[in-house]
Structure formats: C-alpha cells, structure tokens
Image (cartoon, rainbow, N blue to C red):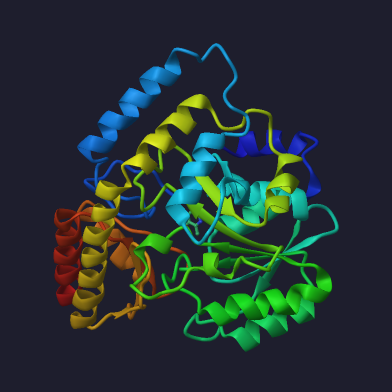
Amino acid sequence: MTQNLDRLNALPLRDNLRGKSPYGAPQLDVAVALNTNENTHPVPEDVHAAIVREVTEAARTLNRYPDREFTALREELARYLGHGLGAEHLWAANGSNEILQQLLQAFGGPGRSLLTFVPTYSMYPLLASGTDTTFIAGERAAGFGLSARSAAEQVRRHGPDVVFLCSPNNPTGTALDADVVTAVYEAGEEFNTVVVVDEAYAEFSHTGTPSALGLLEGRPRLVVSRTMSKAFALAGARLGYFAAAPEVADAVRLVRLPYHLSAVTQATALAALRHSGSLLANVEDIKVQRDRIVDELTRLGLEPAESDSNFVFFGGMEDSRAVWEALLADGVLVRDVGIPGHLRVTAGTEEETTAFLTAMERIVSAG
Ligand SMILES: *Cc1c(COP(=O)(O)O)cnc(C)c1O
C-alpha cells in the first residue's frame, strides 16, 4: 500500500487531488447489508421479465451507437414526474452522481465554488475536487436542521456558483421545507447561482412532503436531481436524471461524453419505468419498515431522526463504533458516517429489519 502511495505521489497528479481518498463505502460480504441505502427488495418478477425482454431486443443492434438523445427515455421520465414537464426538461446520465458531476463540469470548475450544508452526501466534496471546484462546507443547526434564513444568509455570504441541497438529506434522512429552496434560490439571484436539489430519496417521503419539482416553473437556474438507484431498485443499472429548464439540459450537452447512456441502460430504465407500479408498491413496504425502525429505536432509548427516506440516522450511543462492530459480528452491516455517537441504517425487507432490531435490542441491553 505505502509503495502504491509513493508511486501515486510520483505521478503528475493535479494538486487538488493529492492526499484525497476515493469514495469507499465498504462492500463486505455479510448476511444483512444495510449500509448503502440500496433498495434491498429484489427486482419484482414483472419488472425483471420486462427488462430481459427490452435488453434482449436492444442487444440485436449493439453494433450501432445508442440514441444519443435518449428521447424515449426522457419522454417516459417526464411522464413519471408529472408537474407538466416534457422531454425537453429532462436529462439522464449514469447515476445521479454523473448528473451532479456534469452539472459541476458545466457550472463549476476552476475559480468557481460549490456550497453545501454539512453533514450531507459524502460524494459532494469528491465531485467538487474531481472538477476542481472549490468546496464550501456550509453549516446546519445543532440538530442538523437547516432554516431558510440561515441557508440564505450563507448563500449571500459566500456567493457560490452552485449550491447542492440534499432533500431528504443523506445521512440525516429529513426533507427540507420548500421555503429553504426558494430562499436559497432568491439569495443566489445576485450571483447567478445554480441551485440543485438532490431528491435521490423523494419517493420515500411522508405523504404531503412537497418536491422541488413544483418550484421549477419560472426558476431557470433550479435543477431537481433524481435517481432510479433507490425507489426503483436499480442501483446496479446506473440511471440518474434531472428536471430543469431546457437550457440547463443544453448546458450539460456541452460536457457529456458522446453516447454516454448505453442502449442497454436505456432499455433497462424504460422497462422499469413502464412497470413502476410493482416497484412503487415495494417503496410503501420499505416506508413501513423505516417507520418501524424509528419506533423501535425510540423504544430502546436511542434517538432516531425523523426520516423521509429509506434509512434512519440515529444517535444516543456513547460508543457508536462499538455498536457498529457488535452489529457486524451479528452479520448486520450499517453505516458509520463519521459523526460521533451516530449511525445510519437502511430500511430493508421485513426480515432484514427484524435482524437489525433484534441485534440492536441485544446490544443495548448488554451495554
Ligand atoms: C444514493 C444517493 C444518490 C444516488 O446516486 P446514483 O449515482 O444515482 O446511484 C444521489 N444522492 C444521494 C444523496 C444519495 O444518497
């Protein structure tokens, strides 16, 4: 390892990448993996059959480049989102991580800055260094909340080129109030700031939680990012997308690689979208397990945060690292997000959730 590091350091690496670590959520072989917020429900039978059918068809013409504009997929995504959106408002890429990267390639870069409010998604600083965008770690209140007033004040103070708002926020799980998005957008007017709301977990929100999709009209620098990795159980397929004014899609067309969305990816995503019924039924199941985790952890004397996502962030542990290790010894892998006294657990199937809660109960009563 040290030798590799020495060799890496001898390369003419860009200065802003020196000493950085790559994204590295552990991919351990455990019975119950609840650490990366995947949808742990298997792909439903009808969705699987449709994907196999569409991909089989797409395989016949893999000698040709795919539809560079993925028009059918953008139409289907617009239909799924509603809110009066059309294909011209939609853009897709290989996961919402590539979406965010393309947005930084177009609107960030050397001499420009990205403001986010920590703790938030751990990929944001990595995407910033990858595009040589200055990363500004904005602040949240003590309980990790973010008010419209505080967020707007920080935008006015830093004058960022891009803001990423994660709602529901990873790792804390809570959705932002709509007035935070509008206040940040308004505060960014004088700097021409692009405001991106990362709604990777939107489908898991409590009924009545508004999406920033409803705020797009009349806000040309607002972008709402979504993914098929979580609610649609397609983390392995790599499909993320955004909705915004058509000119935002034109801006990322300047930085995307030609034919970046493979014909296989397009076929897979289309098949899943056309069978969203059974996928979204699983989302309802997962929300039940999520609420069960919040209730049970509360009963055990722990402090779970209100969650609008498919995971629960919880505190109230003296030694969260010891709890993480004890869970792993029981075959349950959760996420240590590096916030002392806190852990994050993904809501799994009923069986997985039971395994987690049983282990927690044992650990808490032993400790
Ligand atoms: C999981 C996650 C994503 C999804 O990334 P993909 O590249 O679409 O798999 C995006 N944003 C946040 C906050 C996430 O937690």
